Image (cartoon, rainbow, N blue to C red):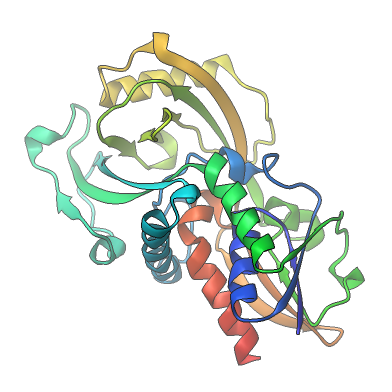
Length: 310
């Protein structure tokens, strides 16, 4: 059975790998490839963010957590490490449903919470260095026999295949005339300083994070809905630094080494479903918001299940 995957971001390549592992013939068709994708500039931390419905994203996230942890242990070139982080909240909330599916989770003591926040928890999660992970995914796809094809897909009807897996991300807005798909702009800063553990406020209106990678720490962020600008903004830079200094007072601005901008492909709900068009099975897998990496392997497994069920 021939499968065509549209899109070569983290979702598309994860799906391609799972299909190849199942013995399908796979072509990946995309306009752009790593290192020129939004996936390449993802921070990236395993953490469900801007992704719904919760009952599905929690499951996909848990499945992805296990796979990322395995890859970190067995595939050193994948660029995945495990780190501790602390999530700070400005109100007491119900504990997240995914807490029982990760290696470490505990509620913070009051003296562990910075001024301005009143609740929070500590967790352990994979940190994914995308400048290593994306090339590793691409190499793994090729090793399994996947065919990489640079091609601008303007209409799914033009593709000849038994199955089409649509992982077009923000491109689905035009490709599928899906006006629910909107960009959520994220600006980040890279700094040559280790915070020891990550610090997070994952509410969109106060979004703050310090993600400690082996090569640097990523500071963020912004979550500006329906904003298509890829230009760096001085005002956003200053806001990010002020927010990060509130949770990490030791931050040293003289150690900043770079900045970047990306557009998260947001949607009210992740679209992961199948349909038959002109006798071709199409599986849509897009709209992951800020949780593309976090949901990637769980969604890829569901894509395979939908194909097998058909």
